[in-house]
Image (cartoon, rainbow, N blue to C red):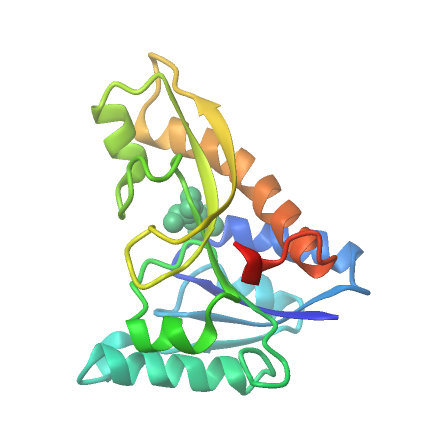
Length: 200
Ligand code: GRF
């Protein structure tokens, strides 16, 4: 059984896809908790399913390290990222950079989904940047989080066309459609040991 903690910051549509997919595939994957850096609307999806949630606000801590330590404490309280049960931490629209100490503690069992074809367009405005660059194609990437910003080893990517009429919203929604399926596929393959993160 792969125990998973999902981290979000916003609407949580990627989280919803994971919740729906794993509810059907419950013998191999269990989302044991959902964490956020604010009272994110997406937390409601977990609460509706009786899945525990936790909120660790950066403004409640003096340093980013102390915030990250509290975040990790909450994750470990649900049996993930411990020595015996590493499990998997999935950042799905979690808009915070995790400090190096946190990443080192949990690597490589910490993955992120990013709405661009990394290494193109890293950072918090990937969709806007792809449009501004006049890209005719972009995509979505699932990667291992390392100490950098969207720089960790790439696990899987999917291309998405950019249409001349696209706005940031329409393009991001088209990317998210692919992103949701790709993230579910990668988490399932990790659970089935078809992807070995330690080998990437
Ligand atoms: C996703 O596109 C993710 O890659 C980006 O933020 C979006 C989150 O979408 N970091 P949602 O909150 O899951 O709907």
